[in-house]
Amino acid sequence: MPVIRRLAHVAAGVIAGTAVFAAPAAHASPPAPSAAPAAQAEGCWGTGPTVTDTLGVRWPTRYCNNFRAGDVYNYVEGRWQPIGRLNAGDSWFVCQSHGPENPPVGEWLNDIWLYTEADVVWAAGGWGGFPATHVSGGENYTPIPNLDWCPWENALARRGTPTTPGK
Image (cartoon, rainbow, N blue to C red; front, side, top):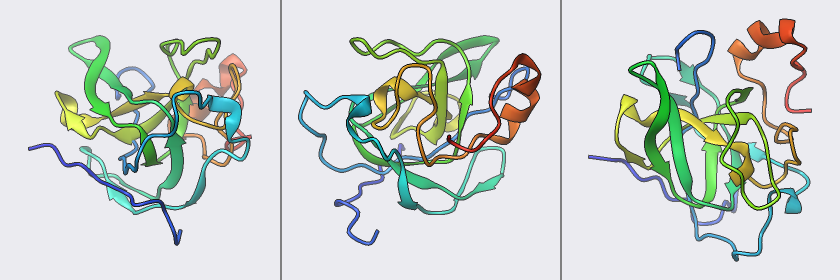
């Protein structure tokens, strides 16, 4: 049975090759459809819960606003594919890493994915990457501010990928 984590407006507050994605989600009511990823320049905020992914790794999290619902992806049976759905709202995420191109949202483009857990799980335990194009605070092909890079991102540094946390 899928677990849905709801957040009533925070008052207080893959493994395949080289990538793994994870970040569980907590949601509130979605913002108006006119909201855009760059609208919240500060990016992520606050401390979320400590979570454990399907590999048994414990992670600290941060809250971010995913202004748009979307699929969570992971490598399953050798393919990058949707493994669950994350509802729109304020959700918690573990970290971010480069990967395949995100589904575009209007003019917003990116290749950064935020590790999280889907609200509705179809496969792979629901843990995977959520597209940065669906999260407030970023710009085209830039990380979401105030969210650390995933540990596996350092392995990608040889390709010129930044390793500075969320900057």
